[in-house]
Every structure is written in structure tokens, then in C-alpha cells.
Image 1 (cartoon, helix red, strand yellow):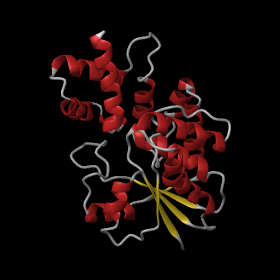
Image 2 (image 1 turned 90 degrees about the vertical axis):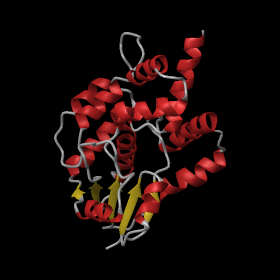
Image 3 (image 1 turned 135 degrees about the vertical axis):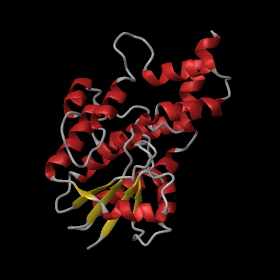
Length: 253
């Protein structure tokens, strides 16, 4: 049976190459937690995402389609009865990407889809695969959980609610129990907290503003503190830097 591994980033691919796990990797090089995701079809979706990446990260359209879209297109050409293992962490960043992947895979039949969970140590659910060694990666793979149809449907509906900014639907979906999703209620609430209804700052913005006010304005200190206190978001340095710079600019007015 052909086995494919969908990975949330290139770093994990490098880690898995040190194991005996077959290296048929499909790498998700997106940050769907950030920027516009609303589109009526996949072609428009790629164009919208390309524009966001170009405007935000100084990349080119060709680079985005070559590095990102071409990887996702592999999902449309998987052989029947293939086993597809989704190596995604529990934080919001990874979960949103996984919801999108499930929406793509749902359009194909005869696939066996599995979730690979990171091994949680020291009660820190947001650390993910970053510090995993070969033994823990092998253990994670051997503990894979199969997506039943109801689990795939849940992922598809989560993506739909996220894409449409339907917080009510997202909240309702988060109460579903599934062996393929951990911390779902917490993660969905974390996303909703980014967009308060009273016109106040979203939770990440408020935390970063508070950190700026209580610490020096060195970015690396703010990023480290944010990651420790709000690891549920899974923001990388690029996402935190964007919020940091906006808050600095706002405070300087």
C-alpha cells in the first residue's frame, strides 16, 4: 500500500528523513491562519493567497505557485487506496491548515486518512513536533488514528466555517467529539478571541501590546513571551512580527 505523509512545514520533513518512515512527503507551505481565505473556487483561492503572500512576504507569484500550490496539487493525484497520514500539531495555525487539507482530500474516495499526533510531554500540548527525536516520531506514527467519514466531514465543516468567518458555526462544531481532533473547543475559541465584538483589540494584539508596555521593545523578547503564553495560536515569528509592528506604530501615534 502506498503511504503519503502530509507535513505542516519543511522542518518536519528534515526530522522525518532521519527515521525509517518512507519519505513520500507532501509539504503544506501555507499560513492560512493569516490573510484572506474567502473564495468561491480553488483557482480563485490560489490567486487570493498568492496576492497575500506577495504583499506580506516579498515573494513572487511564480514562487508561490511553484513552492506551495504544486505541493497541494499532489493531493489530487493520489492513487486509490493510498494511506494518507496528516502530521499536524494541535495549535490553531496547524489545525486551520489541516482543515483545508481535509477539504481537499474529501473530494476523493478510496483514501485511508490518518492523523498523526505529536507526543505531548510535560503537559505542553502546543510544543508539537519541533523537539521530537526519532524515537518519539516513530512512536507518533505507530499511534496514528484513522479518520472515519464523520471526522473528515467535521474537518470539512470546520474549514467552511473558518473560511466564511462564521463564528457561531465554528463554536457549535467545536463541541463535536472526535478521536482525530484534540483541544478543538480551545482552538476554535482562540480563533474567535482574535475578533472581539466590542471593537477592542483581539487577544493576540492585546497580549503583544501588554508585553510591549511591560518589557523592552526588543522583538525577540516579545516573541518568546508570546509563544510561552499564547502557544495555542502557533504563530511563527512572521505573524507575531506583523502584530508587533502594528502595535508599535499605534502606540507611537
